[in-house]
Image 1 (cartoon, one colour):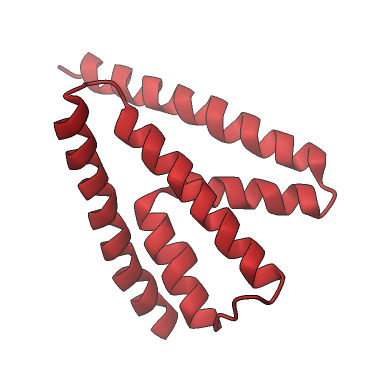
Image 2 (cartoon, helix red, strand yellow; image 1 turned 135 degrees about the vertical axis):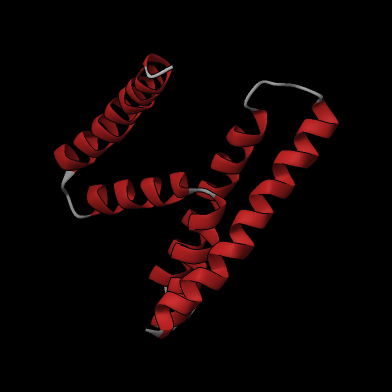
Length: 126
């Protein structure tokens, strides 16, 4: 049960950090393009990759609760794209390259299709 609390606390911080990046980038660039989303996704992936590498090589020791706080909570609140990237890396490291490719194709392809379908459904209800 404690892990759920840590995830919630971390998620709050990650979500606030994401919003902060959105506000800062939009103020700085004054753009409606998805620069903030791209920055958050790329930075999040770099950070989660760095942390996972440090944990895997025992340069950073984290308890299960701390991993839940950081990886699921903070990083998941900041960007779930980093979790997607880490899941894909794990599949590749385990030699499950076909499943990694399927993970990418399904989440990107089906995810985008779901956004379009959800939007179309909402618009058609008007």
